[in-house]
Image 1 (cartoon, each protein chain N blue to C red):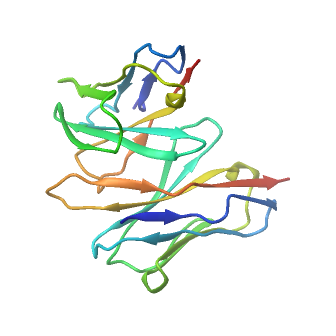
Image 2: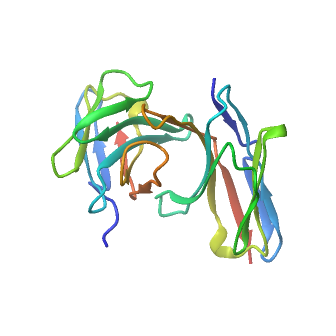
Length: 117
Length: 114
């Protein structure tokens, strides 16, 4: 069965510190997709990244970077030089996808990140 | 272009009533998915519609239903409301069907059941 675990319920750091949000997933499929979403106080989820199971290359986008390791079933997210605007709840998610059939997405419980000025 | 819009933004109902929530996807998007977010259960997938057909459904009772119109707008309905239905209901649209497509979320409708 699918499962996504975000063990860190809340993290609080001082601005400009680096912070890593952990995500561990479980799936029996060989083809799957992993996602990170940001939910600011306004409520709407903002898509950050999608990674398929065959692409273990790490990705960097500005201050954001993602480390995907199939060996440990982890897809961790790092914010470098954090800013107050990064304060939000971050969700990791997993989807077992088949182009020809329906898919379901499973979300982790989220990590509330607070950046203190 | 305009993002995903959801109406109403806030709603208060009492147990036993029914409610209809509306979602207008981004222009050109044909797929609409619905999610329920509660403090206890987190974010859970409700259903996905594409071309006016329900393509996928999460593990929710039959009291939760939805539909999609020819203009891709979608509604979800919850009948015989229970206290546990109090939640933020999020709608997401994407160009096509399936999770391969990036989903864009609306601000949500916060439903309170008294």
